[in-house]
Image (cartoon, rainbow, N blue to C red; front, side, top):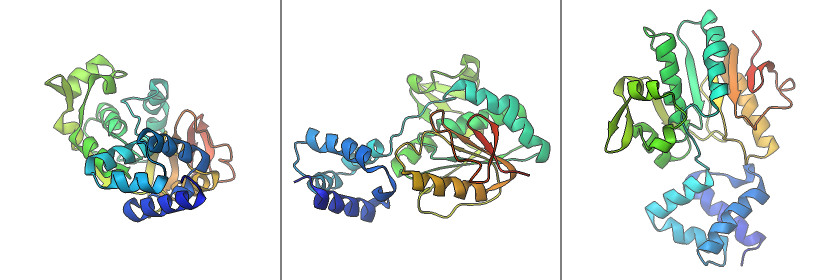
Length: 260
């Protein structure tokens, strides 16, 4: 029976197994997303559905991937990414020759690899640090492998694609020199402690289902994790309306700066 008690039991089971706390997500949206899966599986309760998928490693991985919405591609929203190259990174490089960058909620790795390519082209002789984190272990494993279908790299400039990827069996593999820039790590944005002293944090298309309270807490944690002058880059539908209250100034739309 899909009622409040069943939903509470489902949330408890999920949190015990994965550390994902659905109380920090918008309930109507998550109930609808998961309810669709329950119905499709011809199950009559959230808890029974959980018990079923938890028995099979691949089924469970697919369920978590669906839950954490891993939609990603290289140079997603290219016009915003080009702002990184033309405005944001040059501003950061004025203060520090070696940048500390975090791709938070990196999904399949498209974002950190895109960053590594930009940094290599802008400062070929400097090895910046790029931390890439995600909650989903399976997705992180795919990111580390760095092998993509053509659809996943469709928005990339063909010259860059030819230069930084090897074509193998119809798939595109990121070259080792680009992979060597990136440090992958499992991290739960809503629970784990944050490192400090970042010049640039990207958190894009991650918070869509978070509650407003969870978002505010996250953006406050990012603020503390940034160096003075550091910049937070958010997704194209995720403008932070109360950025001033959280301490940020607006660098440009979707780019928020911690004051110097």
